[in-house]
Amino acid sequence: MSTRSRRGQNHRTDYGELVEIARLYFRSGATQTEIADTLGIPQARVSRLLRQAEDEEIVKHVIFPPPLRRLESAMMRRLAGKGVGDVRVVPRGIGLNAGKNEENLGTVTAAYLVDALVDHPGNSVSICMACGNTLLSVITHFTEHLRRQPNVLEQLKQKTIVLYPLSLYWEPTLRFHIDSEYPSTSIYPSALVVYLAMRLMTLGCKVIAHAPQPPLDFYRELDSMSEDERVRQVTKYKEYLEGAKAADIFVLGIGAGQHDQRYRRVLDDLAIDLANEKGMAGEIGYQPFDSAGQFVDFSKLIAVTGDELAQLSGGSAKVIAAAGGEGKAGAIEALLNRDRLPFNVFITDEAIADKFDNQSGAPFGEAW
Picture 1 (cartoon, rainbow, N blue to C red):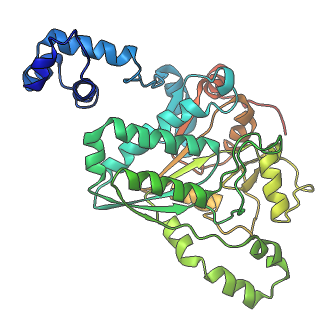
Picture 2 (tube, rainbow, N blue to C red; picture 1 turned 180 degrees about the horizontal axis):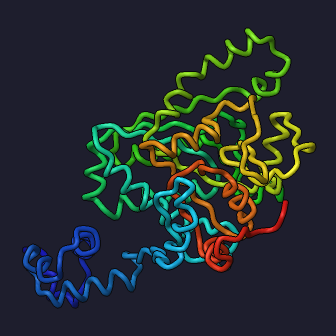
Picture 3 (cartoon, helix red, strand yellow; picture 1 turned 60 degrees about the horizontal axis):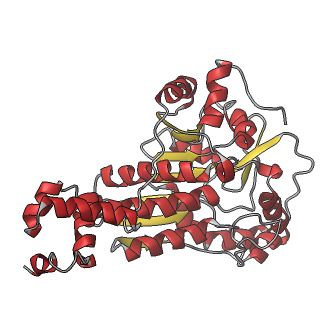
């Protein structure tokens, strides 16, 4: 073999060989002995090339936050009566992740989503997505997770993945790190649907992505339309909304509502004034809820409503909510006042879970 002749060339590296060995070891799970036998080379060479692959950062280690089982059990006891059947708790965020903890939440939510998709029976599975930076992190880690597990990816390729946005609201300009008003990324549900579809397409998956985008003028002029015109306009998007409501899996974030600069911009775009509404504790998919966890009527927004999510979470759909960081404590506290939560899977972090555990059933967070 050509690899044998190269061993006498002052140990010059055959990078084709090195990369293949790395793939066999880290992706396929082959042992060093199996790789040596397959390629017809000494095991010592396999071992040396694997070390070299790490030293040269050809192989980069994956960081997967460990589950915090004790806190998961404590949270499960608190949430079980609210319709939640599964909980994941990731370590608290540190440094740049101290706020929303998007990296840890994204990694674990992505792994959960992969398992949910693969385990779903049938040849088709549908996902309805909300928006935000945590969900952007979920998508990024989701496709990286599939790349690292080719066997799982092959299973997913047997299905058709159908994507829907939770809300049809959008603004036609995406701003990336432009100014203090947009401290990170302005992301909308349809944009995330298209982004996920493109990433899945590059992996060879079968994807159908529905991303309708009513113009902003539609929302701004809705109040001044006649009832007949309003019905006619909304009917244009009804099929997308009905498809979204029938999704098998929902992926949501929980926002801090009016306390978030970007959300206030959304309210301004829609000409919505919540100044007279007291106790607006947070939002899901742009839909505000009050300090009692009740969603405010938001007729301008074409979306799967928060109350509909609560109904769906009592059925067969997986409704996954990911939220972390102490800044979300008030929003989560408000939702706990509901008889049934608008999700049945909750992925959060240590900063939130500690509050559940330490206060033994008492409310937490500051009053809004």
